Amino acid sequence: MTTTSWHTTACILCECNCGVEVLTEGRQFKRVRGDEKHPASAGYSCEKALRLDHYQNGRHRLASPLRRRPDGQYEEIDWDTAIAEIADRLRMVKDAHGGEKIFFYGGGGQGNHLGAVYGRALQAALGVRYFSNALAQEKTGEMWVDAKMYGGHTKGDFEHAEVVVFVGKNPWQTHSFPRARLTLRQIARDPGRTMIVLDPRRSETAEMADIHLQVRPGTDAWCLAALLGVLVQEGLVDAEFIGEHTTGAEPVLAALADVPVAEFAYACGVSEDLIRSAARRIGNAESVATYEDLGVQQSRNSTLVSYLNKLTWILTGNFGKPGVIVRCCGGSRHRWRWGRQGPHHAGDGCAHHLWAGAL
Image (cartoon, rainbow, N blue to C red; front, side, top):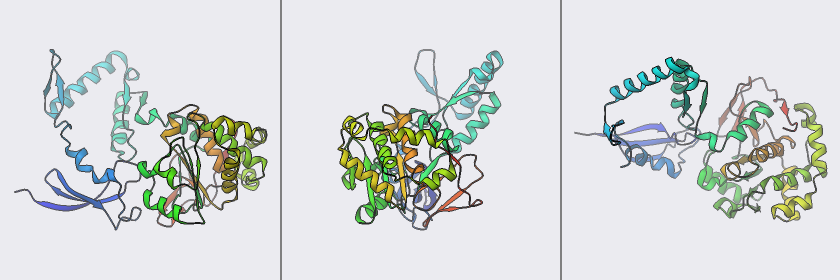
């Protein structure tokens, strides 16, 4: 007789890893709900976690490995047979051509990192040199900029930011930070906070925004450059932070000082007055957090857009304190831990030295 029982676990479908409770019956997930005791998500769950049974037991999911026969059809085989045959063939390729001739693709899950752990072990055993994953479809440019500017990836503390800026992102649907919809509602209802959305589409998040910079598709770089131009030209940058924590800022500031804001506003299809209003709100805020996503990362000038987006918070000093941008991974000696009260530094209290120079 199959028994049912509740289990505490976490969703693995994005980097938030929200806590969930699952009622199981055999392999079936009979019910999924948010875990109210989870320290970060506190009972919140998006629709992806609530559909975990669909991904676990959907009718199109393979129940066993399939091996292609000479006639092109597939036959089911057991796991031991499949693993043994694949291992033999990989060994043959390595022996004949070298491990560097094997290209590894996979292990890019943002929430489930087991694939990466075991994938790296397999790559090492085979001597694999080249690898990629699904993140290369959109995140390559941003990760390259991250590595060049400060050596790792960053996240925003949107729960506590005075101003939030979403560039090509609709977190009402894509989430990507804790308790996303609740946080968006809180920002929208708070007269002391501002939501800025840069997106050609009137998304659900744009509908909630205080300022919607509705650019022409593919002109995000012009809009961001105009915003940065206003910040520099009107003296809204954090000169003290730039002087203490950046390298190579001088040519960047000089270039932005010459940005023809009116021309760039015309190019992106957003009024100059609205761009100036958004820039002034960013420049005068106590804390600003930004987030870019696929809307710009799979569009024109995506790497440049990533760079300009990072400059928005670097030049205004919005780094390493509650409500702004913090390092979340990478090889740095600085570490941050997250809680309901925002990010807390677990290192020696020093800010990173950032590189703002032209890429």
